[in-house]
Every structure is written in structure tokens, then in C-alpha cells.
Amino acid sequence: MKALVMRQPGQASIESIAKPEADDGELLLKVRMVGLCGSDLNSFRGSNPLVSFPRIPGHEIAGTVTENKSGNPVLEPGTNVAVSPYSSCGKCAACRRGRSNACQFNQTLGVQRDGALTEYITVPATRVYPAKLGLKELCLVEPLTVGFHAVARGRVTPDDVVAVFGCGGVGLGAVAAASFQGAKTIAIDIDNDKLGVAAKAGAVHTINARQESVPERLAEITNGLGPDVVVEAIGSPETFRSAIEVVAFTGRVVYIGYAKQPVAYETRLFVQKELDIMGSRNAMPEDFCRVIQMLEHQRFPVDDAITRIITMEQTPDILRAWQENPAAFTKIVVAVD
Ligand SMILES: [Zn+2]
Ligand SMILES: [Zn+2]
Image (spheres, rainbow, N blue to C red):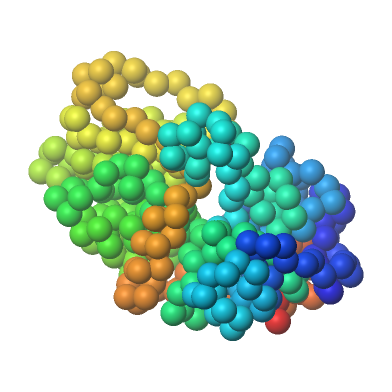
């Protein structure tokens, strides 16, 4: 069967590999669509230290069950599913606390182990989520869960005002999650197109950080109190600091952005405001269920979030074009069959 294989940084081609066989407790899935995100681009560039080569990428997966060796009658052949690409060891401190999303030894499909840009994969039946959704929706489930988990970490309620810094794939998920939770959600970005999609995902206010003062607008919207929850989904030192500065006294700050360099803080504000400051990583099974619920309610602008659908054969060229011009693409989805 065909697979997209990255042999070394900057190089990807379609190769022929053996079709896998499902063990007991597993499913054989026909891969239907796979979404690509910034982390796939980093893998292709060789800038993700967790990726070794050769590697088959692909962790945002829509598939159809073709063989069910789990005994679970819900997962009969023909069922369309989204897939959780994570693994957990069951033994580390995070797993012992029931927080397997942050497993110390997690191996994500397409990162530490081969992923889904191929015709068939096998997965444990416990890692799939059947849903009454189209294929495009199904491959948006995983990327949206990351923002949903951040909002769960921030204990967002309908009484909260939530500000989200960054409306890329992850931030957009946080905007959708906070809005779906009933919170008053404010989306912040420097790109008006992304802010437009965020508004369709439920943001009631949008702030273009290049054209307006973010602290002033936030103060205006919240009568000077500041947002109850701030989600940082960019990873720059400025927004890491800004989150602490703009959040309300006794507010919650959730970081999902990965900072590429150390960040200097005025730590006085941590104490003075008595803040809850949290990291958020990957997602839990309940986040997958919540995203599916939102998508089934048609509360997300799926066609605005996916900017391009390509074939597996086009993927090597598109990866090269994306590497040369990262801003040219936002969400690419590969139609595998
Ligand atoms: Zn992704
Ligand atoms: Zn673990």
C-alpha cells in the first residue's frame, strides 16, 4: 500500500509499504482524510527534536473501520471514526493521576512513531471515537481537542470572560470551546481573516493586536476588571507576559503555546493577583467527546477552517511549498482515498 515517507529533513515521497494486520483489541482502519498542521511542517523541516527519520507523518485522522478485533459492537466495519494519536504508559506520575494526556512517555502518531499518511493503519479500539460526522469534520476533531483541553484546564464557566491570544488551529479550538461552554469569548490575533473565522466559531469580540491596544480593549470590554481566563496559544515571550498582565485579579492563565526561548516575568503579579497559572498539553478522552458534540451541533465553521484539500500524490510538493512560504497555507487536509 502507498505511504508518504519522510526519509530525511526536507524530503518526502510516496513509497510502498506492507499493509498492517490488526491484533486482538485493535481495529484496522482505512485512512480517509488526514489533516496537516504546524507540527507536521516542523517534522518535515527537521526542527522537531522528537521526530526521528524515516517517519510517516499524520496525526489528525478520519478513518473507516474495515476490521474489528475488539469485540466492541459499536465499532463494526463501515463505522467512521476520529482517532486519538496519543499513547500513555500507565505508570508515570501523570498516568497515575489519571492525566494520561500528559504522559511522560507519550508517543504521538506521526511524531515518535509512524502516523496515518498511508492507506491503512491499526489502532487500539480504545483510541477511536465514532461520530455522525463527515470526513472533514472527523479530521478536525484532534486539532480542536487541544484548545478544548486548555479551556477545561481553565475551568471555564458560562459566567466567565475568556480571552484567547492566537487564532491559529489551536487557539481557534480554544475560542470554539469557550464559546460552546457559554463564556463570553474574545479572540486576539494580528490576522483579520483568522479573526473572522474566530468570530464564526463564537468569539463575540475580536481584537487585531496590530491595529489596536490589547490591554485597552480588554479593559473596555470587561469594565476594567480584565478577563477571568486568558488562554495563550502563540508561544511568544510578549504574549506569555501579556497574559499575566491583562488577566483579572484571581484569574486563570492557561498556556498551550510552546515558547521557543526563555521568558522573563514580573513575578510580583503572580502573587499580587493570586493567579492560577497552568500548562495544557494534548487532550483527554472527554475533550474528544466534547469536540464531537460541538461539531454534531454544527457550531463550528468547518469550511472556513480548512483552506485546502489535496491528494496524497500532491503532498510532497505541497510540503515543499509550505516550507518555503509557511504563511501561504493554514489548514491543509489530505484526501487519502
Ligand atoms: Zn496537529
Ligand atoms: Zn505515563
